[in-house]
Length: 143
Image 1 (tube, helix red, strand yellow):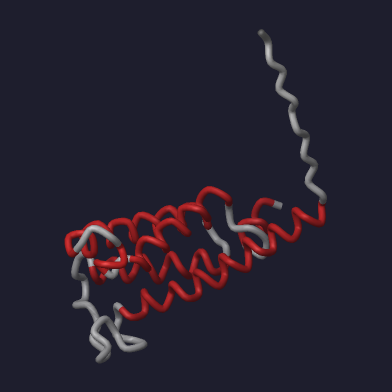
Image 2 (cartoon, rainbow, N blue to C red):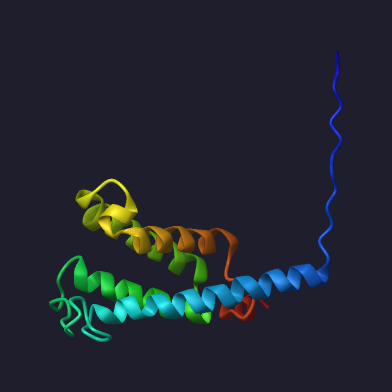
């Protein structure tokens, strides 16, 4: 017995491609803007790491360096410069934070307060895979 499989052909319209690129770009901008505040908290801004304005000691690992990576990576992703490498770096930083800080406190992200770290890690991995979308300096450099 032989079976035939019908192949479905999908065509992407230019308007659909433009809208998708805009949504990805807008999401990248908003998410990296919000994530940048996490980096600034490590330096004592926006309540700091303790809610009292405390920052991470200068040069300490992983806290201070993590804050530097978060801030620089968020800035690069915000403007869309070296977007994929920045997104991979940020995904790794958040995965590291999850497994070293949160996971030892409990199995599930809701139990160990690691949900933001897990979600950011996966979002940044997504940006690394699909690219920056529209409104990115990377796109200008390609031209």
